[in-house]
Image 1 (cartoon, rainbow, N blue to C red):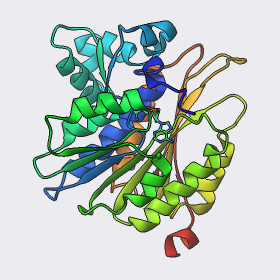
Image 2 (cartoon, rainbow, N blue to C red):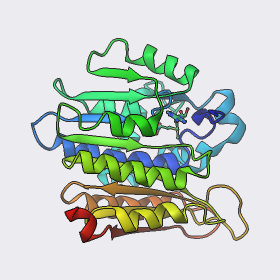
Image 3 (cartoon, helix red, strand yellow):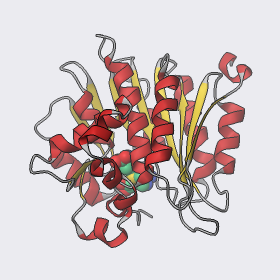
Image 4 (cartoon, rainbow, N blue to C red):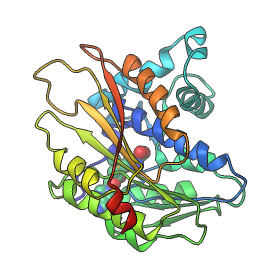
Length: 290
Ligand code: SAM
C-alpha cells in the first residue's frame, strides 16, 4: 500500500505528543551508564522540512510544533523539562531561527545516543528509506532496514544490547492494524522483557481506535500505561481529534514525567475548546505472569 507520507503531518499536535513521550523514555534510558538500543520500525525520513510543499499543504504543524516555538523565552522557562527539551532540539537544528527543520523519531533517538548505544531504524517506503540511508551514513551507531515493520518488530527483538526501546508508529492505513499492532507489540514485549515498547495510535471521532485500546487493556502486562491527549476539537470535527501512546514495560517514574508533560501539552495544543490529557495504568496481572 504505502500511500502514506509523514511529510504532510510532521510537527503536528500528534507528533509533538508522541515525540515528548519518546523524549521522556529516552531520558530514562540515558539515566543509567549501561548502553541501550532503540528500534524504530516505522521510522519515516528522520528530518522534515516544514517549509516544503507537503507540510505547507496541510499546515498541521501550525497546531503543533509552531505553538511550542512561538512561546516567548519567559513562558518557555516554565515548561516541563520534556517540552523544553523538544524546543531546544528544534532550536539546535535551526541555528538561523524558526523551525524549518523538524526532527522525526530517528533524529530524536540519534540525538540521545552515547558512544556505545545503538539505533536500528526500519522503513518500507523506498523514498523514505533512501532518505534514511543518506541521513544515517556518517553514523556507525545507526543501522537501516527495509522490511515490514510488524514482522521486524518481533524478528529484531531482543537486540544484543538488552536495555532499550521499541517504537511502533504505523500510519493505520489498514483497519486491521488496530488489531495487528497490539498483538505485535505484546508479542515483542514477551520476547524482550527488559525492553520498553511504545506504540502510537490516533484518536478518531468514529472511535476506530477502540479495538487497539481494548486489546492493550486485555493483553498487555500489568504496569503498562496509556497516555491519551484530547486536542479539544469542536464537536463534529473530522480527522484526528487526539493522540494516544501505549507503553509496555515503562521505566520507573516515567509516569510522573508523562503526566506533567501531558497536562502542559493539553494547554499548549488546545483547539476550539480546552484539551485534556489522561494517563492511566492498563494491563492485566495474568498477562504479566504468562
Ligand atoms: N516514527 C516517525 C516519526 O515519529 O517521525 C513517523 C512514522 S510515520 C507515522 C509511519 C511510517 O511508516 C511512514 O514513513 C511509512 O512509510 C512507514 N510504513 C508504513 N507501512 C509500513 C510497513 N508495513 N513497514 C514499514 N514501514 C511502514
